[in-house]
Length: 166
Image (cartoon, rainbow, N blue to C red):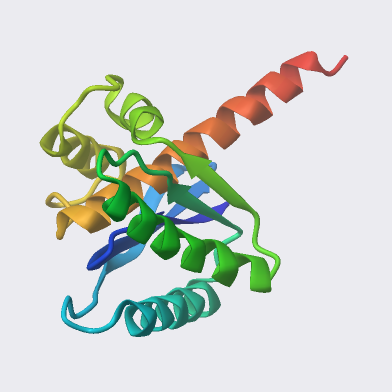
């Protein structure tokens, strides 16, 4: 299974591909899209939508996993919600299944502790994907963590389904 993880942000949005196979998890391409802060929001959203669409076409994921958000400030929540919508729309246009995960769920799945900090998550992403160093930027590490979370959940669901069969 190939999962493209997305960590939405109003200026920087992380992405990362994780491939789950019989041999385990491995990282595919990852990075971040940086959008000019001074650019009007509609232009940033269009650029991000196009970038996500290109990544979907190039990386050929089977599923998209997007970090849901918790933001205390209403204005920031609205903007990040719009950014997240670009990922959902890009996936919907090609019929790609989408899963949303709260930050707490991602941290629990990857670092085994829901209140872990970004450094702990990045270190666990490095270890789980057997990377030579922690992924940079941090937004890419977060996107990989979202994809890992989805892979682990899918694996657990498959195992539970297999046990339920006679």
